[in-house]
Image (cartoon, protein in one colour):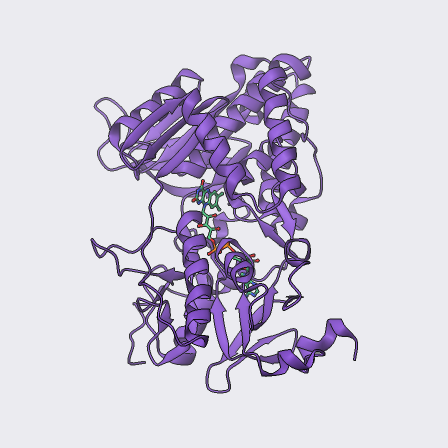
Length: 475
Ligand SMILES: Cc1cc2nc3c(=O)[nH]c(=O)nc-3n(C[C@H](O)[C@H](O)[C@H](O)COP(=O)(O)OP(=O)(O)OC[C@H]3O[C@@H](n4cnc5c(N)ncnc54)[C@H](O)[C@@H]3O)c2cc1C
């Protein structure tokens, strides 16, 4: 039998592997990949199933959207990352069903049996019941979304270059970003830099004064997960660069090139409703768990929270199924000191994936490993070239030093050395020259927004249904 088929057929070619337990990992993102790496070379057979053939470094998607780096700089083929691990195989496919009684996952019309299952399918974007906004205001969750944002911004600038009508140019040179969290601030800062610089240097007709980036958030400050002083530093920096902050208002409607924001308590002398017109509108405002959480709840009766995240036990298993573990953005892990669920971020996802893999290995050797403890390194956001804000366990840093730490941390988390080198080179080149090497207009909207990659498609179906109350354990 050909070696590459042995796991799928579940007949290991090497006799010694036959008795090894089969661990199936669904999702090769931060959590799933870490688990696979920890299980590499250990006495288990591992099958990693992902609907994409690459691991995506989502925190740098905004750099793809703003033409600073290209797709391959932030994504690494899973086969490349796991090539040296002979007990790990990678299969491309979208898991569409689970049978916990038979211990099977279903993908590509096949049933794959597991002894242990690690679910790490992450999260997608939500429009809070307004799924019709998705095409008008792309989210930034997968590579194609970043491509689409870049395509829209650059196409608008190209049209403005050939448009004598000043009002039309004003529209084309305006971008709105909804959501003032780290991704929204990063995207707004980077788009502003791109547009200002392009208008000044690369185009001949554009008036840089007409370039406008507006950041909309319902809170009273950006980066609400950070302390007020860091929010203020980020807000001041964005303001100083010309990014307009529209705070305290909720998006009421989005139409083509038009967004309406409602203010519950508008500042004195300002209207309760504001209409923003922009050729490019981006959405960075809502996250919901992968639909596999809901599916798992349907199949096992486990709990999911309001965001669709699976409520897990201290060892990341679900009630009645110690062989199923759920990690990363897909899980709600509230066994913390303050009882608050861990945030949906890369750091916790990596630590969860690593811990679960070690726990499985400990079980096999009849040992117990210490309880999971998340180590919070802190949070950071890069707002502009050489400017980041960071809160590292109470140590607050802003400016160029913050950017340096941000850069080092992201390079350290990057799974492949080649990408580390490329990113470092591109960042240094950008700092020295202010040039962006990846300002390409590629593809069409329907190629980027309607991509058949499962997560977004399935969520769309979920979202078009009326909202449901929280699923109970007793279902
Ligand atoms: C734009 C953006 C910026 C971010 N910035 C930061 C940041 O600066 N710092 C930070 O800590 N965090 C950041 N995050 C959050 C961070 O990326 C996530 O918390 C992290 O990716 C979660 O890891 P995960 O392994 O749970 O899921 P993911 O990394 O999303 O991986 C999920 C994997 O599962 C696969 N998959 C999904 N469904 C299926 C299926 N049905 N079948 C097979 N495979 C499937 C997907 O293809 C994907 O490879 C950012 C996120 C975004 C979107």
